[in-house]
Image (cartoon, rainbow, N blue to C red; front, side, top):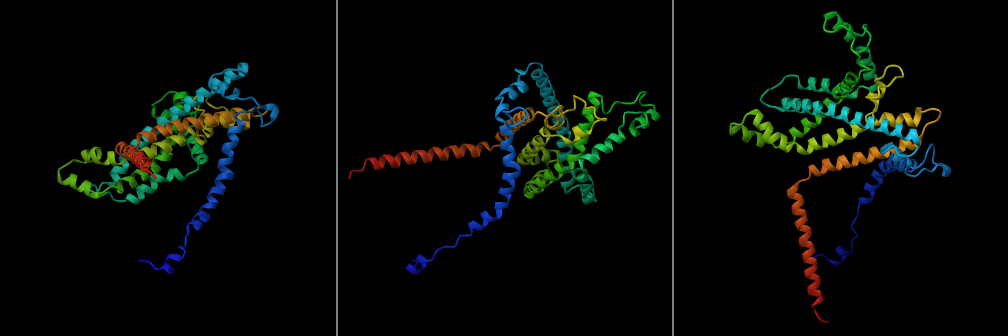
Length: 343
């Protein structure tokens, strides 16, 4: 039994030092992320600036989503916004699907102990390298390689080989430009996705694979029955992060242009926001940019919530619900017991 002197000794808590260490992050987050986010919501209810006489309420949202109000301007804004939203989804899905398939195949290949591949480190570095190259450099590289004139390297080579008779419109063509942006995005990010999936596979219990090998399971069966089900959390995480980045896609669609002419079928929502924030003449419209940002923010939350709900462990959710019901029942029983005791 502890003595009175031992009970009087005050315990030392170091929790406050943890708060001090994380304080710089929250300060930076508040000034550079949280306040701009709040200010975006405020600007979405105004026109060209947050002034009392420029308050328009929900007109910006009505124009973007339904084309109501503002006459021809509202209809034009609605059509443009819907087209950019469709472009964003098409380009994201078109680069995410091959990206996840290639990354998953390479991750399983590099982590298979039976293959004993030489130079794994070299291949990992080479495949990850496009991710650290700046988007401006990548866009300039592909614009030079896939120039639309007959003197462009790719077009010139295909013409010399007799594969094509006319230069391919890699920049201004609808399918060609979309395909190029999908390819560039996939090429830039598949290495990063591969590394994440490899870390997930290497974190799995090796005894599961050893037991499967002893039972005579093939590599395909091990991959389908063990690797994929256990990789579901990291796959969902990859999908959510890719979705957030894909919906905010800006640099490659914006930089992959010819002069100042932008293809309306490759313009994403982020490019739409930037154009109305910086480039629209005679003056920019901050309200449309902010309203489009809020709509994109809500869409991201909805899609992210759906992905996280799909990743929820049903057994754990059921047990949690049962524990809550049991606690509630015990509290009611305790309350009833106390109520029946006379004083």
